[in-house]
Image (cartoon, rainbow, N blue to C red; front, side, top):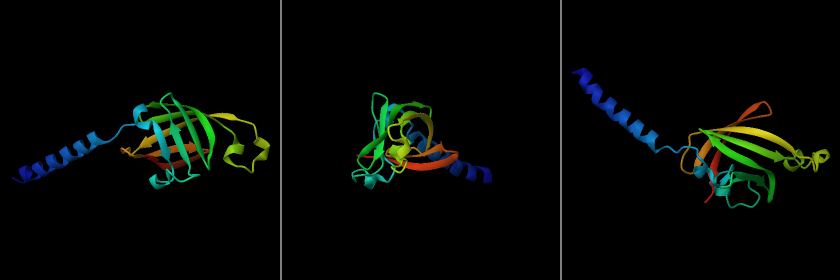
Length: 139
């Protein structure tokens, strides 16, 4: 009798978990197209806020403070966003004057998880460090 009493709640919990998982978003081209903020949804309209815009043609722009700092191409492979970008260290840090006018290429894999309709968490490896950021869809 104890088995039957535990079985019903276990089946209910399992069906709820499966139902929730089915509602989770997946990283895809159609999901990503648009503008995203790294500083919270409330900063989508704030001048100078850091953002990235993914375009339908597979290109993107990254920037903040009213300027574009990096441009490149993107595509999705499972729940990984693969970025191919061109940027200048001077664009990311104005004090690096020796790099002004010099641009370099980088490939940056971004691993996405906890994907919701208007936000996802992203993990990237940058300069030997693992960094996690939450990214928010701008209206």
